Amino acid sequence: MAKKPLTSKKQVKEEVKDKKKISGMSDTAPKQPYIVFGAPHIGEEEIEEMVKTLRSGWLGTGPKVAQFEAMMAEMTGATYALAVNSCTAALHLSMIAAGIGEGDEVITTPLTFSATVNSIIHTGATPVLVDVNRATMNIDETLIEKAITKKTKAIIPVHFAGRPAEMDTIMKLAKKYNLVVIEDAAHAIGAEYKGKKIGSIGDLTCISFYVTKNITTGEGGMVLTNNKEYADKIKMMALHGMSKDAWKRFSDDGYKHYEVIYPGFKYNMMDIQASLGIHQLKRIDQYDAIRKQIWDFYDEHLKSLPIDLPSYKDKDIKHVMHLYTILVDEERSGISRDRFMQEMHKRGIGTGAHYNPVHLHKYYRDAHGYKESHYPNAEYIGARTVSLPLSAKLVMDEAQRIVDAVKDIFKKK
Image 1 (cartoon, helix red, strand yellow):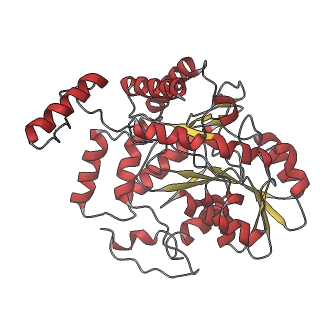
Image 2: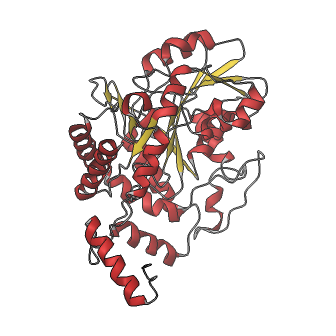
């Protein structure tokens, strides 16, 4: 006799319960919250400071931006710190201040976010890519000299994941060929190279305070330099090209007339953003310690798996552990990088891919004739890289969930 179909809601509920018992699921088991990749840690001090700023009526560029700039200069050893609204703006302004423009070439790495290359293009210059060292994931300093031509005006090393590039070699090359060094330190606030803070080595250094960075202002950036001429130009160009300290024109000192002396940009940071930054910066050492604790935990619990782990142990540098990037090679591990990321998402964990090399994106292929195999090390990393969650907000229970998820994926592959 044929089995009657289920018709009542009661019968449906009973069947669902039976299936959960078989699978080990529980009706009362709480659903674990999704672990967001790169979630920032925001304290009560930041919230209170922002409320004060909102109540003050001064929301744009003002005294709190100036305070944040002074704190950054003191921490990094840079003579001048100039706050802007993104690291992209910082890179663009730095190149313009250094006189880079149409017909010039700028050397950088293909293993970076598109903003690095876009900033070069927006000046009218041409990006010239140099492959990375597979171990450090930074630009291979031994290949830079071969890429230098009569048109080369600057080198932009990217301190990938918080690890400083080999700055001694880069600075020697820059001196030999009279080039400007603009450090893309979006990942590397607080990093050090041979005892020197990143921000006090190159001609100009660009910092990011984006929401996923080691400290954040939501959106925001900074240019660090010891060159007064560059600093004066950047300060002026970042706010419409208006004369120095134009932001003070509405202050309680009385209205001050300004003059536009360059067709500038709207790149200024606001006091609302700096309200976060001045307190985030005070806790940078605390945040770095949390990141290191999680990094070491990952190292210990993932070392037996068929994946490559990142390394920060190098006596010549201070790595600030911005990204924990593992390499998932399908041939070795039995699972593709993209499938691994999907499986992590199914388990309620966000991940990132840093990066699909810029030369493989459609625009750069079409505009600059880049082809696959041009930069094999960057391509090898780009096809396998996965960044696991790593932030000051992450707690050890979440780190354990992440480790358990990674192990479970490789167990079931």
